[in-house]
Image (cartoon, rainbow, N blue to C red; front, side):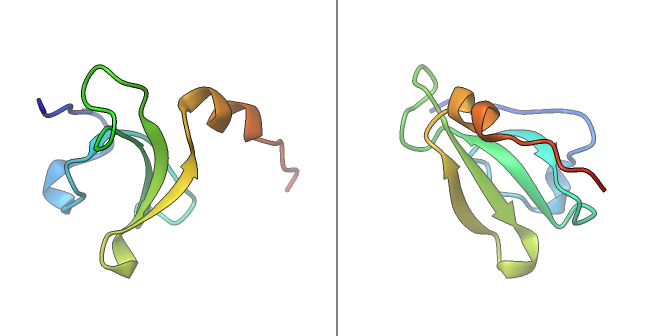
Length: 79
């Protein structure tokens, strides 16, 4: 599989696994990020959406089966 890279606030030297594309940070201040995970589908498939947690030894947690499902599950939260 060809490596997919995102360049922006995410810095590869932070140690996140090379599983796909980082699409957003969380409110943890950079200690976990949301990724499109291409490990199962390959470069031409539909990636899953996962959370990668730096503080838990790069633990990967499944969030959604695809990006559309992830977006549809988002809710507005008032502070």
